[in-house]
Image (cartoon, rainbow, N blue to C red; front, side, top):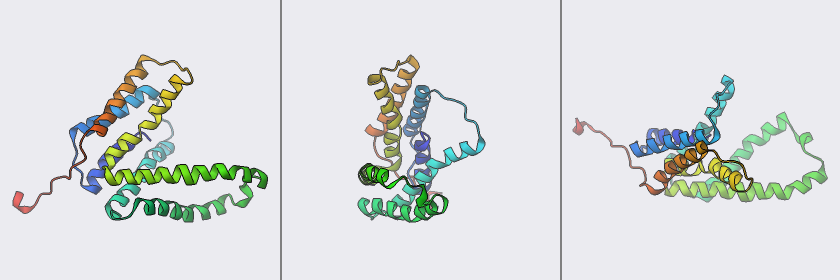
Length: 203
């Protein structure tokens, strides 16, 4: 999923008209290289699995392109709510066909899980989505993606180092520093500019 900043950068150029900037291209390269060093790059096997893995971030980013290009005046609260409502309308029939009510745990166990599900869904997921759409409305998509997406693995590594006492290698330290530099380029840099539009007068 760490390839998502690449898709965001390319998609923002193709669909939103944001110009490529060399510093951003180099920053994305630094982020990806740093994460590969920290996590340890491993060869991927299975063509279908790799294809699905690479397609997932495209699906995520395409929803952001649609939201930014066609729904510019929509309030982030409405956009977040609509995403979950329409998602439920699509996924609920699929669940009923393939799994159904019989796949649910016993009533007592389900009742105990409902508060956790409510907190995870209504609080964490909804407000996380709300914060995301509010962010990309104020910042450009590539910048927001490059700041948010690498933060997950990097923060998990910090927790594992300091709280779990896992050993840190020099390669991981270098990779962490490289990714952090890439993120800082986006966080501290200027927003994206529109690509120049050429007309007949420019020829």
